[in-house]
Image 1 (cartoon, rainbow, N blue to C red):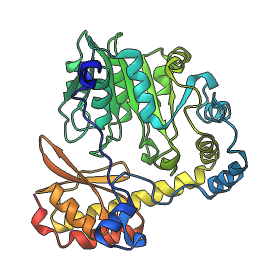
Image 2: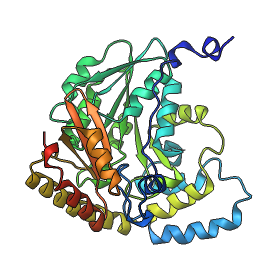
Image 3: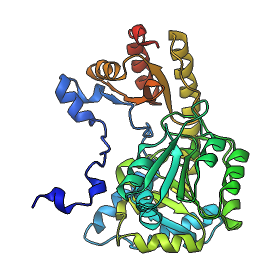
Image 4: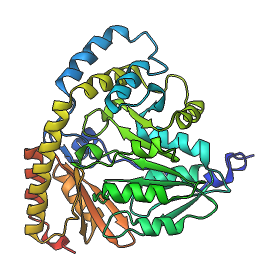
Length: 365
């Protein structure tokens, strides 16, 4: 008997998320100096983490023999004070990705559907298919979530709607009023999963706590991987009603987040001056990249996050050309064409990217 005869049939054709190559692998492949290879593919914070976090992690080296805090007590307590919510309204995950899987455990099976924008984070579809549910991708409007279209796609079988704002990989954010109105328009049998991975880059953020206090079926996801610069440590969190969080806790494995990550997140949350610095820097460099790309003839999509998406003629070809010169970006395809996504890096990283793009005028679509 083969494995295929034993594995759940819906998983036999399950797509696999393929991350980009690490910097070291690219350097070896093209004979480049590792220090001159810039990764602008994964929307990571270019400044790393707060210096205060580095100091705290050094202290953690004396405790590697101990299991981490299985309840994430201290981090949840700090989040509760930060958000003015109760501690039992938070759940900590190994990145917000893990929490997406928890949501699948609770709500998705072969008799249900999940709705999301068709040019959004691929993991929404992957998690949906993982549990045998039907993914329902919905066309976007001007590269942003089209709430009328999303609402129209909801059926009796819909259990989850995934929404990200700012949206990845396109970049636009929906207005706070539109987000709140959409959440209030969803029927009772639908859970809104609101992904705020890039929310710290916004000036105006919707206060989703209003919906939680109203008793809406909503869970919000945040991450320490982006503006806080802790992607290596994999820490994310959900906030929702106490009842919702209690159900998420039932599908969370013990010690799912390591102690280094928990401690780093605690300290990172306290250093909001660092967050402000990163936000301001990102705004300036994102504008510089947008103006430069537009001046070259490209058409970057207006972004509210720490990356820019723009259409190209041959995404894979451009990706390979830039990577061979030491700049790693992210190619992507959609029904509307081929695109390149570039993360906002440090000034010297952005300068090298723009220098290489000057030579790629044939890629203007």
